[in-house]
Image (cartoon, rainbow, N blue to C red):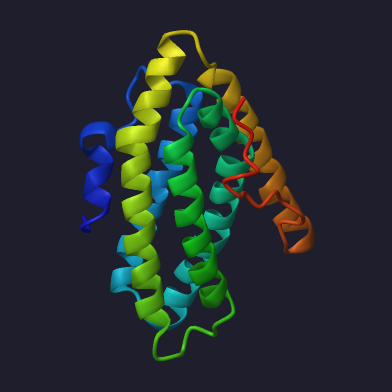
Length: 185
């Protein structure tokens, strides 16, 4: 087990039996990212390129559903600072993932770029698991937000985006988040 994957079974990174659907959906993806970044550490050549391509696609879909659905809901319950930080981290990840997606996989810095993307992504998803998701879970338990309904929206949009990729090879238009543009309620 790699250095990231082991976290999947630890503390707030685990998918708890009482996690609402939205958290289950997103934590499942977080687990996949940790596994893929660990696999990238061991991979070379074509295997590394395949992992890099999968990471870029999955991250694009994941960030899109968070920005379009989760972040506005989080802002509506007062989690604006966490959302703004997440948007900034997403922008940095998108930039690096965009560079990686344009590479052939044979470039000298390819593996290093995937490693840095991994460090940034793991930091981001660890914070979400430990802070934002826990605060949102408390709000869900207090009846301030319905994370089960949001989970259905996340799953539906995720399936729609992956369907577009299968159909066209591209996600199509998505809503790029900007901290000032994410509604607060």
